[in-house]
Length: 148
Image (tube, rainbow, N blue to C red; front, side, top):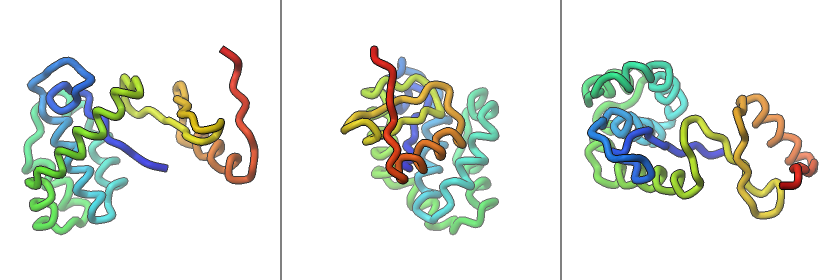
């Protein structure tokens, strides 16, 4: 199971129309920095639970630093990661890859390798459905897709 960021703004997502709304880009970078400290899911949960604020305003570094501190991250490591150009390059790379797959929103779940070497996009999935499919595949079940 991999999680890739896909900020819903053209400010850092080349597959979306250009936008000056940078908040989602900063949030994606914060999630990447949290991942480096083993707290990706905790920070991601907080960012997703505050999506409306992220959408309506320009989140700034201090607000994201507060989220990091609230989740027990080392703030000096977080600051270093956040200011590192490679972090935003990773965000841009994930966004570009998602655009090539035709993603239009988040979250989107894709399965790979269940039917040959293909990606399958799940429509309106729930996490428990995804985990059921993964566990079934581990036990040898083959997923049959309707013919198109």
